[in-house]
Image (cartoon, rainbow, N blue to C red):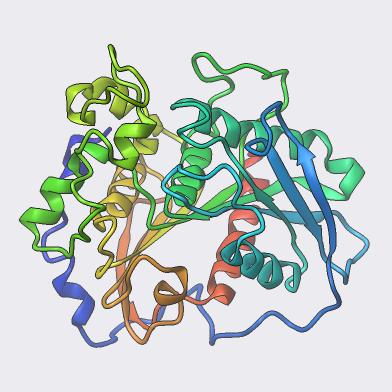
Length: 355
């Protein structure tokens, strides 16, 4: 990981309150998805042996053109505690939003930290991508237009899928048979990434810290339950993630950034009392330092909620292009329409790059 990415950008939080001075070029006035008929749902497709942790539901839009469908893969967060989130309210909201825009949507489960510990969850994310690509013809999907979105630990899944897209096979990963695990664009909402920095950053920057969630360094925290430290007896004898920094670093999506990466847009609320905003910032800093295009949006007043992050009255977005030039834009926060446009631009960029 880029060492400088572990430090907060000076003036980051303060910048969110500035008046609007620039227009976000890829944004447009908020537009809801047009009304459509009910999508077709193909439930409980198995992409691996674990049940329900390796199941997904594929939703196909009612209105379909003649071409292959772009795909949104969505994973809802649960602090890695649940292995069955694909039919939750947030997942169904995303299904409605994007099938109405002409996408297929795969709402996926991954194994919980009670089922298996990292890297199982990262391997599941990539196995789901491969399964959908291998069966793209059957479902009318475009295998070259896959996007991954998610919130919280599902945002971690999106970030992990993104930053490992250029890696054919991870250590210990099974079932890799030549099919690509890559996605072409990703949008993680408030992902946990650099677990080791959470508590210190939140305390030093006087951020809200919800009791019962902090400290993340505690032996029974979601992160400590995810990462297996040497010598632990799960779940009765756990230790803090600070006791095994190397194993914890391996769970950080930013640690896989190395050169050419796909476009990524990370979004976070400044009032998030569960995860500090540096978790999103670090992904942005790391990938742009490696020469990649990315965006980072910080929304004042928004908590740990997609609904609060999207469509707020103000936000600050940092945008870095392929030439390493960064712009800072102050305006209303993005909408699903803006996310849709970002995905389509990412697909077009991937096609040009042959990615």
